[in-house]
Image 1 (cartoon, rainbow, N blue to C red):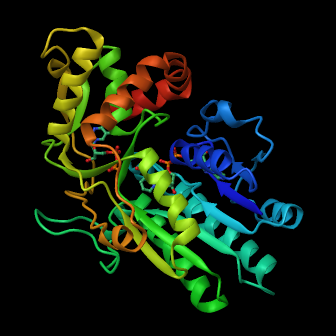
Image 2: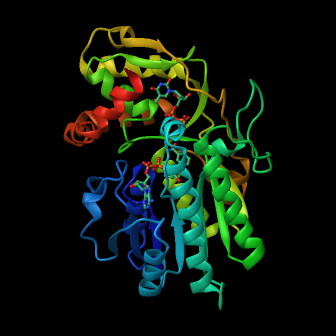
Length: 347
Ligand code: NAD
Ligand code: TYD
């Protein structure tokens, strides 16, 4: 069996690739990634020589290339994670998100339909999406699989659009798909443009911690390996044409999360309690900032028995340890173009 995983050099994708390569020696895993600023083959050093792993450098926006690899490798399944993934970047360059997240997804759908159309049985197109497609919650309530789409950022609008295309290809062409909408992930290999790794890096460097607005925004955090395990389960056991929400049952207001992170970092760095908290700096808010995301993960729990395996405190500690033990990784991704991005974004 041959599975194409897109975006496997990125944060979540690398954990999914590692899990599949290690757990399924009889499945050939093809990791297709354009290696944008967010893609990094260092994330997969430990599996790069595995006999069932192959890296393909390519862009999902290039339809000819996508058709070529489908013809060559005869994929039986696709797990699609490649995307532009950062809300702040989507505000400054929305078209990049339309290209990769919408055009790129449609190219993969077209290639899947044309190579599988004679026999869809045993085939599967798994689209990895986000809870951000549902828009923002108020103080109460949770996102269900049936919650209406209401995206607010160019990022979430592009993901919502790609979800709609996947569903439409199921209805129109019979493509056997499954979609998951997951809450905010954290863990090793997370690019330091997102809240947790950016703040870990800044604490190490004694730099200000830029909290947007009043810091009262709420996210539901899930450890990345728990997401990878959910993807494995849904790929193999999820019902086709279904959506599953995945979440951590773990809501934190940004400011409380940042304070917990500061506390844990002070201990790890041997700094006096309260040292890192002094770096907290309130900055201008993100435009269109969603107030609250929170997932009701009852469906995946009841149907497939999935639940998170670590508490937030445990996951955060594992994450901090990983960054402190992988300074080279952190230094290499925060040099060069990252510096320009940071300057433009925060100064
Ligand atoms: P990421 O930005 O860390 O990685 C994205 C990967 O896709 C990178 O390796 C990049 O090189 C690759 N890529 C980008 N454009 C490409 C293109 N045109 N062709 C081929 N490869 C390309 O993202 P992530 O955080 O790992 O997210 C992965 C997926 O999970 C995305 O679809 C995202 O929407 C979704 N998701 C993320 C989160 C989260 O909290 N990070 C939560 C829910 C869902
Ligand atoms: P982020 O990690 O970008 O994920 P998302 O926007 O997809 O939820 O942001 C998480 C939360 O942290 C969000 O409410 C925005 C906030 N945030 C800051 O306050 N400062 C920052 O520098 C960043 C990157 C995010």
